[in-house]
Image (cartoon, rainbow, N blue to C red; front, side, top):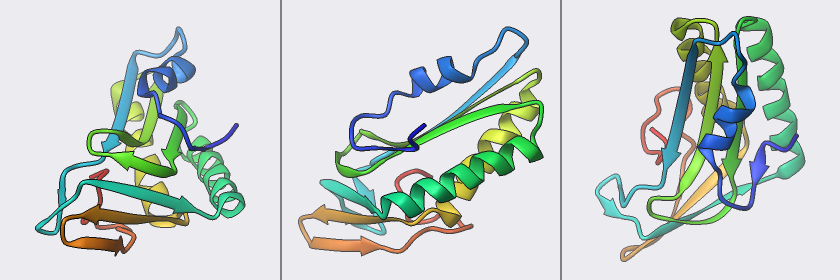
Amino acid sequence: MSFLSDGPVDPGSLLDAVRRDGDGGLALFVGVVRDHNDGRRVDRLEYEAYGPMAESEMARIAEELARAHPEAQVIFRHRVGGLSVGEVAVAVAAAAPHRSEAFAACRAGIEAIKARVPIWKREFGPSGTTWVEPCGETGHGDESD
């Protein structure tokens, strides 16, 4: 399974992939490109990744989530390449027998991705081009807050 995509990310297909008949809770996080960041207008952006390293780290995250949340099933995908305002940059879907497990697994997934996966973002707008520092644990300064 590939965790990176150079084409559109469909959150609905991720939910379909994790849903099982015994699951009563589904949680979905969808991060989209917004039209501003740190007081600057954003017209579009590009995500770049070192593919093999990013895929390897995302596989580790998936394994860790499976151990930490054994009742949940989690799947995620992150977009690379050029994106316009409103497009999906990242999506995490989780399914579990109960909502608390699904929410916890989904949240843990997005936090780990943003903190650990080598993906870099470049914003384009009227004031020029800006490389954005990874958001890490804070979740600030990123389209997928």
